Image (cartoon, rainbow, N blue to C red):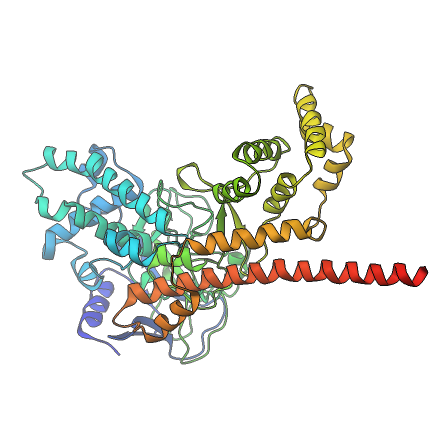
Length: 508
């Protein structure tokens, strides 16, 4: 269905030299928004669109380029100013039709009110991250955008550059920007941002021809936000590596009766959208933002997917220390963590110097957590022996890991420990306690309460509540799986002991 705004966008794209296959249909509905569908079967290797770099909104193409570079801004900060500047021009902006078509902002958590963040995300992986990042974004605006307004006040209308506008464009950059090349950097890419995401189901890949400004590699649609999101946690728009992309170029022709022209085959001023697998007629054509769990999807793009197999739950190191202090003492916990780290183990690094352990979608804990619990539960005599060995090794010229692994039987085992070896009853009991402690962060409502609330929730009218509930439920289901995982190991231990007793009695 082509709405008036979609028709206006298509006219604008044609006027700017955008090309797309007539096998693609752009659909715009009030319920589901924009989608791209195949009017007939598309084949792997088909180039289904060509996008001129000059038509992308970047620092280099914006009318504010001189102001941005004069102020020393670059990256996503500079792009944010460029978008605000082009919005301030209204109909005089070369991107007016595109900006009119794009939403004012995406419904990602950084633009939620503080009360919404605290109410809807409490206890989830996103709660503290969003609060910290809202503060960082405000500081960015205060330190970098405000001074430009003071210097350029005759040329700029302040209302288009206020903090609300800055948060709005940051939300668009988070969900819609792509890495174009080394010269242009990040930018808004019309047409490419019409394709919807589906985790682990990429149909079409966004790439750039090599140019004088870039290396001869593919360009992943990338939304990295420096200083805001962990690059490894929030994977970028495409998960395809260069080898797979090379394979996708096989038969690098245009769809036989497409509107695209092969004249631009070696044109470094163009970007391409290439099919990396066959898509049947009538099916939606998906791009992918990466293999992301719901926390990453909601943070960056404002939506979640039920039963997302890439979901994880984190258990902070501080929570492990809190558990340890309930069983032993604060001093005991700190000493055991210190030894664990001297033995070469570490947790994942989070924001604000936090450390955490991942629990997988299947409820399996990170092995580093199991080793830490193993060390925390060691008898004092064993702990002191290992601690002494670690101290001696630390004073040698050899690495402590090599010396200890050669000289101490525990560490020989620890270096090759399987999860099965580590899953003693005591460690499984500790995992059950940690699951309960992590669960308590969600407050008094049970997971059943959340599931009932989701069933009553309208996705169309209550997007924030809907997606926050999907996130909470997905995390809490993983904690349930962790409990089941630990309980199953305890049952196995109990069965093994009973079998051993029966065997011993039989021999007697």
